[in-house]
Image: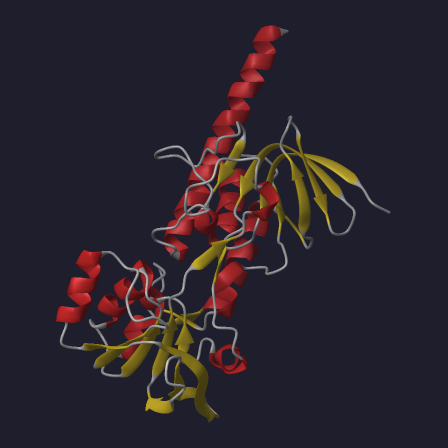
Length: 321
């Protein structure tokens, strides 16, 4: 039977931002409820080796890191709910959240940590090698391709920035773009074209990614020229897909102010959104860094601001009585 529950703070999302918000909100005695969503743990659960999260001298696994974050949040008092929010009503407080299960949560303060998803090529072989030679984050995984040959797919700022970054590690970087010109800013294009490690394959798409099964490892890509129809194979050690990210903002579309990029807009140096009492943290608002450590920092900010918001609301009610 469906139930309705009232909480001081509800957090939507269980990635680094959501879990960190839960830790800080619980330590502030706010008894937060964290609704885990359809991909508990966020993007780190599909990441294998993690070498850039502070505090771990050795390489750790993304799913293990998120398991530890969730356990820490629960240990200090966050209630983790295995459900998926399907509707959010922000017209009045407490905010009303409806879930897949039929349960309803009323929140005096709400933290949105729903994350973002990398856009992929939608290839079966791409899914097969994700985390084993296929990545959507050069900053996260570039270090593992020292002295290797890699391909970057895309033609915007992100793709060019990823290609340039990868030159710090890779022996060669090949940018594959489906058009005959890049969409990236001119200054980035100039840097790309000048770099001796980078070459560009124009008018082409990745049709397939090949490799070994045991262990899973990328060894080649099959390319198709869209103008001539010519198909060719290129030996590579890694494929970086850089065709953008999609923030998970559908729940609050039309209710909170968005950036031109489609991410949730927050106040400067703050996690506060355009709706009083609603805060955003992590990849759902961050279209610049998109790192686990920055998401965790924003989760901390959101929880601290939610605590201050609720304290100020309590003081106003007390003064009015």
